[in-house]
Image (cartoon, rainbow, N blue to C red; front, side):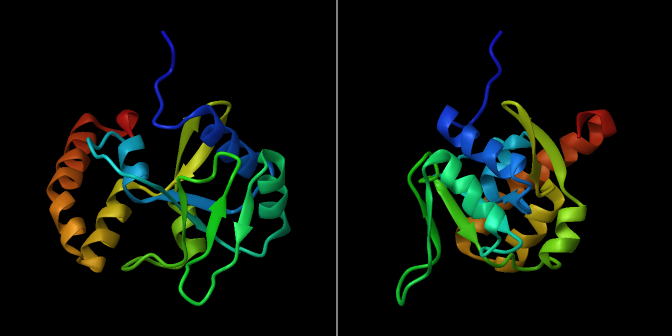
Length: 158
């Protein structure tokens, strides 16, 4: 049976390039929650980078024909082309520790040929609670139920 994933082959290639170039990043947000079993749908894939000026990020983007677009007056930083279009750059996670501390808590989830560092579900919940936007509050019961199910299954399910 084929492995199921929420990503296209181009998106997986981009994530593989990030991992292979050793770019410090975390997959966060609802896509990260979905990878951990949450029945959630999102329109984008949020990535949190340690350093957007890291040359390893540029190399990974070059490998897949993508580019980093620096923030402008009315635009946040973004990625374009090469399977990176659905990825959004996150520059701050509300309610969490800094990138380096959160990276230590990451869970590794296999996507394609590589394992991708993903923000754990309990930390996604903490951030959504801290942000407090209506859309974040609306998804919290689903994320919390998923976390309870994962904990009930034990460490082998995580």
